[in-house]
Image (tube, rainbow, N blue to C red):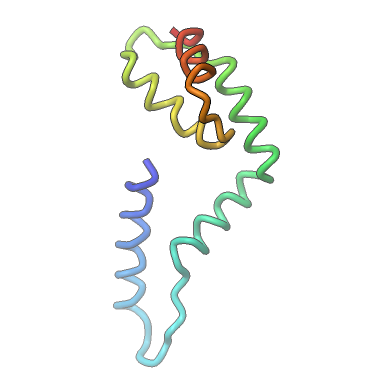
Length: 96
């Protein structure tokens, strides 16, 4: 998902560059945009708490396969810095 957002951002920047008058040099970077969007989502603590809550209440949908469930859980694990495979395995198992 982040790669899709970045692609959209880069195409937006390219369009902005073409629309800028000659001599204008400032264009916000992807990092500026990402920081602003994360700030809009809340503080790092609030995002981490929301990710924990989403992991604990996550359940597999009837139309969702196991790989789609893993794709949903991965960004949440990244948000909470969950790199212990045992916890990830238990979270995944509980969501099934």
